[in-house]
Image (cartoon, rainbow, N blue to C red; front, side, top):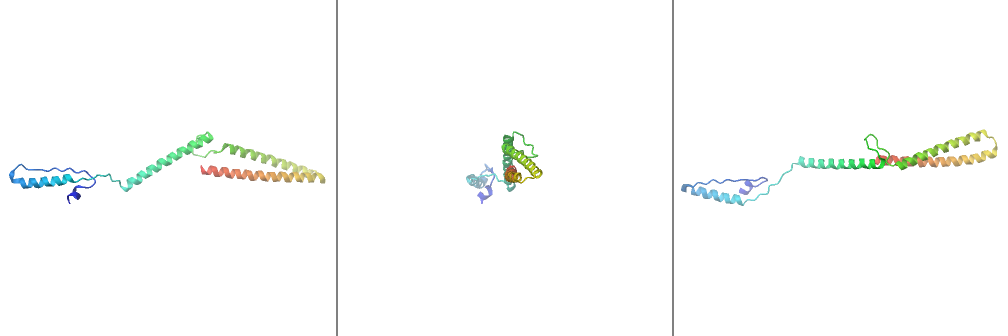
Length: 166
């Protein structure tokens, strides 16, 4: 009973009062016996965290981790582009691929223009032998044009996917 009364998660101090008079010898001996028993009790105080405090600690750790990841992502973007990220739009993460995509778009435009020129020449020219040669050239240009368009679409989709992952 004494152990449960004095134990727990806190420190306990006990003061034993004794009387020097002979008439109170029994009370003094009883008090001393109680004090000796109380002194033998050892308790281990521990700091109890409420459930809210541990959840709050977890959330603080998570916020710190997310801030760290954001800082790493911003430095990664800056390293790739040489530009500071303002939060409005993610700059192109792959400048070399973007330049290649622009080059392919330009080649596609020039082939389309050449194709149109050949069609107008074909229509203006009425002779059969030249039509056969122009049709073959036109078919070749259209095939090349279609291949360039599909490559351009694949690169654009790849670029959009990479931009979306950042």
